Length: 200
Image (cartoon, rainbow, N blue to C red):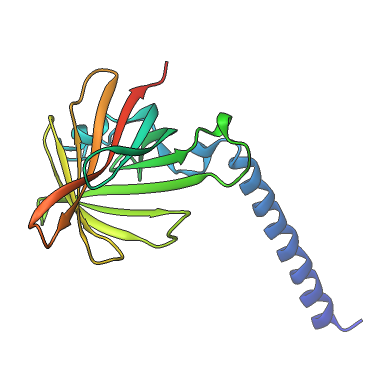
């Protein structure tokens, strides 16, 4: 057998075996998601103090989502879950928004949304990104925060101005609302409300 062909074959076989081991280890590691470096146990000591404004949401929440019509009346209501955690070595915060609750779902067509936010010290604002399984695109935004209220500004795919507010923070509850700016009336209109209650 040609020596070069033998060495090439051995190298290829070894590479495939090594890749297989890495893939298998990756699958095993995903059983414990912390093993792949996604989750962090706490805020990074180097993270800005304002990370605590989002940090008070870290944990698991049951939610009631209310969709409002133009008159402010509730037209639809859904039960869901909202889970928050530190990521990126404790420098950022991510959430997973799920409708309906997984244990109440009758099929696999659940609505999933994820958000990621990290503080930009140059802008003195939070930079945010959001995407979900319905629209399948990324929406970017900026937020300012205090211990009492977080305000996020976005422009949606319809080019509408969106204002999202997290407020009324309590030990085991908080509220969320989405407003759309009505160009004709030159006013903000509330389109969605969320009432969150911490699990457990």
